[in-house]
Amino acid sequence: MKPALKKGSIVSGECYRGWPLRYRVTRLKPGQIVKRVESAMAELQMQAKAGDDVAVREFERLLTALGSEYQDLLRERAKAGDKSFHGSSSIQELLDLADDTIECLGWLAKNKSADCEYYAERRMNWPGFVSILADIESKSQAIKACIPLGRKFEHYSRKRTKADILFRCARFAIDYFTDHPSLDSNASFYFYPYIKGVEWMERERAHKAINDYCKTLGPVTQTNWPKWKPIFARIITLQFGPSSERWKLIPNTPMPKKWLQKSEIKSKRPELVPKSWNDCLHIADRFGTTAEWYQEFGKKLPLTPAERIELQNDLKLMAAGNRRHCVMDIPPDASLARLQKRANERNAKWGDYKNEILRRCRNLLPRQ
Image (tube, rainbow, N blue to C red; front, side, top):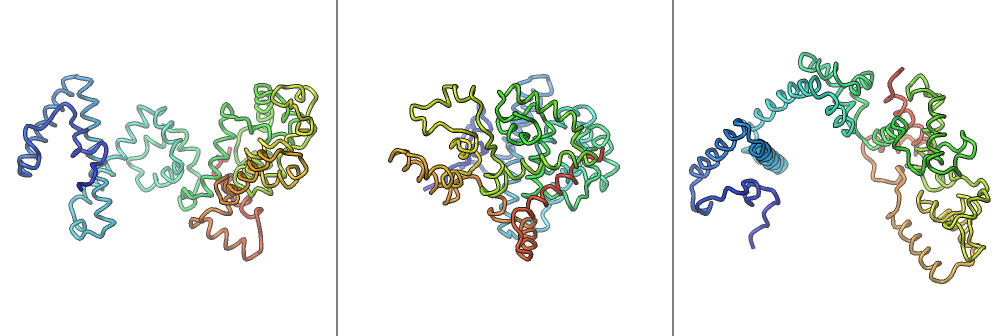
């Protein structure tokens, strides 16, 4: 059986749609195939230069497809230890391309800085890229001068910007608190110790109260870190901490009467009406604390057999690791392994992990 053709590959025919070969490829010699491909590419390029928008798009798409195929081929050969790859001119070509790319980035940063900033923000290891600009100073001035996001991370050491798990945890928290419009339904739980009654406000009102409070704290910088640190500690614990620690942070303040009258809270069985967020099953499920909820509330409730079976199935899924993972439990990368070793030597627990992520958060922030 012939292997299936990779989707979008040159061989499958998808990359030269509308340009079928005259004869079957297998009947042509390699040199003949190359001439036909070069002829077609030259024709497409001429149409693109003549101003044909469709030709421009198709030519760029074809170049991208060819480049991806070429990279995959080189990657496979390198991993397999193909001797013909060693000393190949392909390596020099790739290095030349990488060198030219810096100049392209410089032009983009100068002429399309908004686009560059948008895509740079999506690259979680962007600070690491900025930190190596000193090594290519002559070609990187446009990038450093035109992208504010790059300047924000200039102070950060290259060795400490590895996009590891702890780094991504820190960036998640920073992104959350430096982009207020993205506040979600969990935001009230992060701020409720600092804003009275925010955990029971309607979302729009809660977000306004949170944004107003954030303005009093000032920008998220190293200078203001003492003000922001407790809030960062809450989001880090609720997102990445063990379920027992997350359970402690779920608000258990009494539910206001107006909430008890809402249709989504009302129940035909009064004994199942929640009295606080702490005893709401759907909140426990959202934060991966169903086991803790069951320990405190589930065993006391007169659930039906069907409800109890469903709950037991959820607990089994959690035990099997199919729910939210704690950063302490996932397979460690290099940074996590070092942290795990230090924590084990001192018989430490979540506090070590939380403090390490908080330290990275502080170091990632701009000074002012």
